[in-house]
Length: 221
Image (cartoon, rainbow, N blue to C red; front, side, top):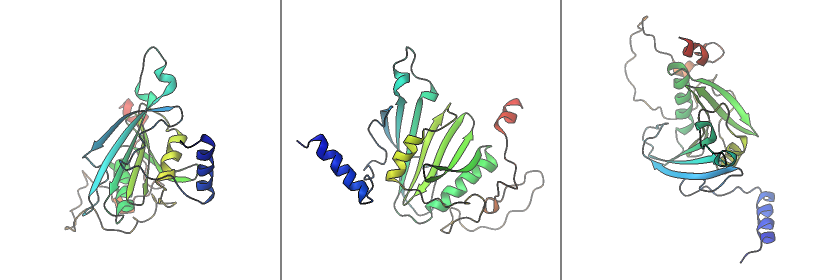
C-alpha cells in the first residue's frame, strides 16, 4: 500500500514538472471537492453547445455544500453546484460555437454575459433567470459550472475543473469577430430585414454598444 507521504511527493513532483491531473473518462469529477460533496452523476444526450459535423457527449455532476447537508432542511438550489462537461470528437469549431451560444443567450434570452478571469482561467460568466454559470472552452471540450438560485460560482470548483480542462478562451472574445472555425449553420440566403422583429447580428455583437436586458427590470415588467 502506498504511504500518504509517497502520494504527496508524487503529487508535488507532478506539479513541479508542469503536469496536470488527468481528465476523467466520464468527463466530470466523481469525488468530493473540498467542502463540496459529490452526490450525482449523469450522462446526457442533449448538448447545449452544438458544433456541426462534430459528435459530442455530455456529462454532469452535482455537488452539495457540506454545511447545508448538516442543516435540518437540506437543500435549496443555492446549496448545489452543477458541472457540465461536453466532450467533442474533435476540437474544430468548439470555441466559435461557444461564443455564438453565449452571444445568443445575451441577445435573445436576456442573460447578462461578461468576460471574467478566475484564478488565471479566462471564462464567460452568465447571469439571468435566477441562474449563475461560468463557461469556457478547452481543447475538445466545453465546461460549465454553476447552478440555479446562486449569485456566484465557487472559485475552487472552477479552478479544479480548469486544472483538467485548461481554458482556450482569449481576452476580448465577446467584442471581437468570431473565432475561426466551421459555422454551426449551413450557408443560406440573407433574411429580409423586419423592423418589427429585427434579429441581432451575433457575428458583430459588441457588449459595449448593445445594452443587454436587465434582470431586475425584466422582473418588474
